Structures are given as C-alpha cells and as structure tokens.
Image (cartoon, rainbow, N blue to C red; front, top):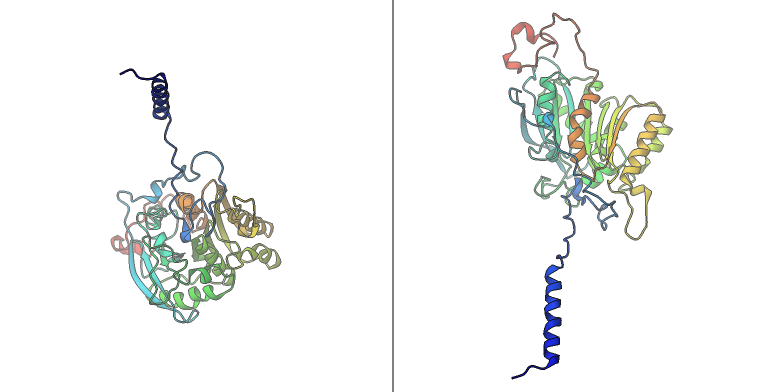
Amino acid sequence: MKLSTTFWIFLALAGSALAAFAQTPPPQASPATPPQAAGGRGGRGGRGGAPQPMPPGPNPNSQYCLGPDSMPQEGVPKGEIRGPYTLPSNVYPGTQHTYWVYVPAQYDPESPASLMVFQDGQAFKDEKGDLRTQNVLDNLIYRREIPVMLAVFINPGRRPDQVEPSPEVGWGDGFTNRGIEYNTPDDKYARVITEELMPVLYKEYNISKDPEQHGIGGSSSGAIAAFAVAWERPNEFRKVLSNVGSFTNLQGGYVYPERVLASEKKPIRIFLCDGRNDNRALRADGTYDEKRDWFYQNVRLMKALTQKGYDVNYSWSMNLHGQKFGGMILPEMMRWLWRDGPVSTDPKDMVERSFRQPASSKKPAESQQKN
C-alpha cells in the first residue's frame, strides 16, 4: 500500500523533534540548600523568610575547612568532657540549663585555671561539627598558646518537658527558651551565668577569680548572649568571642552600638567575625531592613567599639550564617583573646620551653611552677 506524502512529512518532523529533545540537556537542578546554620536558619535565607538574593558564583562557604589546630594531633594529651549536668534556673523560673565541663589534661586542682564559657554548648562540643572546640583547646593548651583553662558548654534553658538541643534536633529556636534568653539585651542571662553557674563551678573546680581570666563566647544568638554577659558583668567576664553575632532586631539587639558610645568604656576585649553573605535582610522583592542585617550590625558594633577605644579585633569574610568561617579561625580567635598570659624569657627555663604535660605526669618541683 502506498503511503501518502502527508504521512512521510509527519514522520520526518516527528523524528527531528525527537532528535532535538535527545540533544537538549535536562533542566539544571537548583543548588542544594546549605545545611541549616546556627539556630535553625537556612544558610541562604534570612530568619524564617524566603531565600535572600545571592551573588553569582560558588557557594560562599566553599572556601572554608578546618585546619590542623582543630583536629586531634598525635601526642597531644586529650582533655575530658564531663557531664551532662543540670542547672535549675531561678532567673527563668521553670527552666533548666544543661551543661558540660571540659577539663584539660593539664588541669591541676592546686593551681587556679582560666575559664571559657560557650553558649549553645551542644554545637561547640560536637566532635563532628564545624567548631570542634575540644580539639582546639587540647592543641593550644599543649603548645602554651593559651593558658590552662576549663571550658563550659552550656545549652539554652528549657522546661523539663522540652527537647534538649543537639546536633540532631537543632539549636533550640522554637522549642526552648533560647530566643528570649540569648537575644534580649538585658542582664537576665548574665545573671544565669554569674549567679547560678559560676557558684557551682567555683565549688567543684579551682577557677581563677580574676575576671581577666574569664572568657565567654558563642555563635549567632549565642554570641550576642556572650557579649551581654560581659557587658552587664565586666567584673566577672572580660573576654568575648563572637561568631556571626545576632546583634539584630530579634529582640532589640541592634541597640548595642549606641549603648557602647553612650557608656563609659568597659574593660572588655572582643573578637568579632562575620561574613558578607550572612543574613542580609534583603528580600527578592527588594525590601530591606537594616535592623535585621547581620553583617551591617556586626560592622556597626565594631565601629562603635573601635571609636570608644575598646580592645577589639574582627575578621569579615564571604561566609553564610553559620560556623564554617568561625570554626576555621576559632584557634586564631582564641590565641588573640588570650595573648597576654605570663611568659618566661629565661633560656634556662625548661618548663617554659616544654610542651605542657598532663598534671598527673608532672614532677613535684614542676607542679609548683606556673602553668
């Protein structure tokens, strides 16, 4: 049977269409959403909002990786993390704080130790996370780059029936007291640390009473909480480590630059770090609220502290909201904050010229010398 000319034309057109379809690349999948950042915020979006416009190019976090100071090193004595412990709160009735205590191998109960307190403790002590603080402390203490210090990893407060923050369930926003405790610019959280936590620590450990030997740090909302503790209680804490600090209008925290300029200078040393691609409060529809721009508010605070003559250091990179950049430079932040410890220049001082050994392995004469 003869086929009509129309049929052959149809068949040719169909074949051409199929060939064209086969050569067309499949639609490109949109970039994977980065892991959630501190406090449950998506890396490319603002707090609870739609994704913010991003510049072209690689993921802003693609350049950051942990260095050797953040990894376990052969021959370095490992400290112990004790806990978890529960701290009932009278400042926030009905809540409690879970915390852990890092005790370095070199801790000697006969010698007062320095202290660091890290908010969102579950993240700072996470052995597989972006911070790995225990490794940093082990390495820097061993090499005498920071003093022998205890560290507390404390979680935000929660009711007993609420879930404990963890790397698996999140940082606590929406299911603990984190948002109120950490982001409100008042003295209530400072009271938790100085009136509820510190007396327990002093009872259990030999911690220096010198506020110059007390540091406090955090990330995101934990960073503004750390700053508030030192700001409200500078006679208790004088060193602050802030990563992507939420000095924004979550609970009015954008007020600190004005408070710094209006107040007498306080004896606080602070290291700020943030990224140009932190939550910028710039939405796809073009609206913008500078009070919720993390990077802008961190820079504002840095300028106010600098103008007032504070001992301030800072580092601005390309990072998203989270711990990628802050984790990479955590060792350097700690070195800078603790740079003025005692040092011997005596070439015959073989204790000073030796790596710090575990307290249990010290000779009797050596244990009486400075740490």
